[in-house]
Image (cartoon, rainbow, N blue to C red; front, top):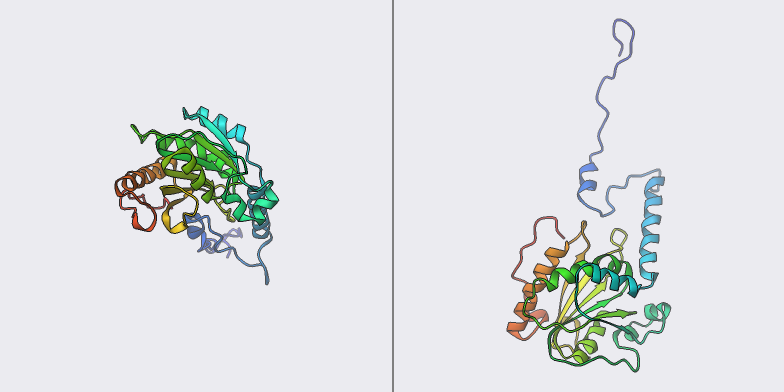
Length: 258
């Protein structure tokens, strides 16, 4: 279409992408588009980059010095102990989950009488521990006045169940394990919190409670995670149990926090 002077004008507004609103509402890989029979080049490159980030998160070594420094900077005043699982290296840890569930031979810890033990474990994403463990621990401890808390334990090549023998050795009634969760293509830095009453070797997953996806700003922030965990800790102490018999009926999370 042209004006009487011959200048060209647009006949209609350019079409808008109907999936744009959905993509803005989630970090999931949705509405990627097509280029022939495959993905557009930009989307393919994004996928490869996300996959590389996830692989790097799994294979990154836990920097215990960095964790100690972050805990100190966050104002966590607990003594910090370090332990290693029975897995001698990262390759063995990934191939032998059972070795990550028990301490290395000869591990000793000071025994006391504590309400709570906190274990920071690298799990499948040491990156999550580097970025989120200190802030989470600080938020939890400031909500537990009067609780006797054991020295904090930083565990390398560790699975969730390593907290059971560690908590028992420390003499804690409850153990909470902060662990780097299995990375996804949009969440390579997700931290999980696992609560177990009466830690001892042989505990099973049904005897634990889990708070997942602690990774602000895209998941739970530290205050939300701490509020939920502390509510569970208080209920666990009253009930004398954890796991399937302990229900999360306390803090209601705001929309979009998951």
